[in-house]
Amino acid sequence: MSRTASRLGSLLLGTCCLLGIRATAQTLEEQARAARQRMVEQDLISAGISHPRVLEVMRAVPRHEFVPASQQRLAYLDMALPIGSSQTISPPFVVALMTEKLDPQPTDRVLEIGTGSGYQAAVLAELVAEVYTIEILPELGKRADATLQRLGYRNVQVKIGDGYEGWPEHAPFDKIIVTCSPEQVPQPLVEQLREGGRMIVPVGERYQQTLYLFTKRNGKLQATALEPTMFVPMLGEAESQRSVAYDDTRPALVNGGFEAATLHADRPDGWYYLRQARLAEEEGAPEGTKLLVIRNGQPGRQAQALQAFGIDGSRVPALEVSLWVRARRAQRGRSEAETPGLALVFFDEHRAPCGKGEMGPWVGSFEWTRKRKRIAVPESARMAVLAIGLAGGTGELAFDAVAVAPAE
Ligand code: SAH
Image: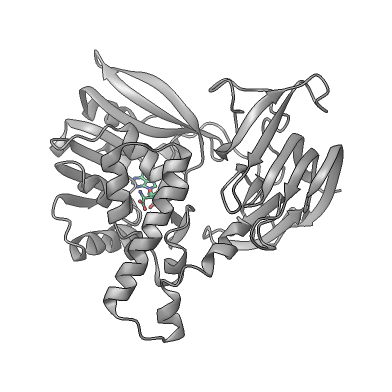
């Protein structure tokens, strides 16, 4: 997360306007194009996106047009950004991954649930015949519609409503993409997917979800679990059907010891956004036999693992974060901000960042060491994202028994 700050300097887009510097429209366009090019190289290709047309479209669609002015300078960083109404635009990697997994075809008719900013719909619109997208919050749906119109997307239709019901008038769809998270796949969407069609949905609990790719065969969904992920919850009918309650006065991590690896043998359950991080097995691990090893050789490159959890800052004033860490030639990256360690970023009810805690820096080489720290929680905090890794630094860090608990 701290690498964000370091990359801001090189990203003039948006700041020009803020500073009142006159830049011609063309210069801004060129800057945006260069920023997108960098994003595709550094955050998409290096993280495994390979579909040529998807990469081409990610280089072309102006993400900065889909975020509020205050967020434009961050538009080409691989992160979710607040878009108002407590919602977020998904990180570019997630958009590219979901699009690639849908296997978009020029003749496809696609249904999207969760229009949000309209960015994912625009990316799809470049690749398929028709996009139908549903947004439950009228203010977001209207704004996305206007943005899509302004940018000339004529093959996207936006509807305000509960996506749980799908859009029966236009069914069946060749593909369905759900960009908010239900606890279970809504049955109407299963019915509105054509036989042989693909559907991608982040299914799960409020802060623990798995991205699933489904294929419809003989009227039933065949599931492939892709990876752990983190989306905003699906509101409306899906929300009222939720059965697992989340207690945000008792925040905790899952699989902090990295022992569970049911989705992929080399990646831990419960952790998402893994970059250059893999599971290792060692007899001498502080807890169990598995540990997470994060390694990076190129300053500035992402190398991390993330986990989100709910926390009510008005009732939990402080957290105790503890873990075991081992370092091998760990070094800072290009600046102070690129420091190997742990970052805990708090978000308020609008999903805007409202505070931060840090552990580290962990540099040099040292054997397994237990670290613990009390971190104050902002009163307005409702959610936190914990990141462990090199944050743009180089070398290797190994982690085990990462835990979070309300401080005594
Ligand atoms: N695809 C979006 C990301 C959206 S975030 C983009 O590219 O920007 C998820 C969106 O889903 C939010 O805007 C949220 O309001 C919307 N949403 C949540 N529940 C919904 C529901 N039941 N039906 C339709 N939209 C929903």
